[in-house]
Length: 113
Image (cartoon, rainbow, N blue to C red):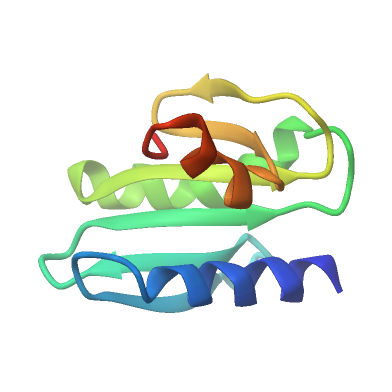
């Protein structure tokens, strides 16, 4: 339920984007997945994984790592959104953010990133 809510919120907020975005879901036969894949018209791709947990585990990055490694420079970044309070960079172009970041980043006077 939280995943559906978060995806719907991201899609709603994407309407404010200055560039057109398309969205999809990614899943392999091996069960690797990314809940939301965002793509620009020029082929830049970002991934969003949603976790209804207060902490993030290494396995939560499997799908994002796969996209990053397969797409190379076209993969601009991935994020795992979770219910906990911590935000940090896990590794190259992969980050962890609290779910409430979807509503709070603009109040902090900046842009996500």
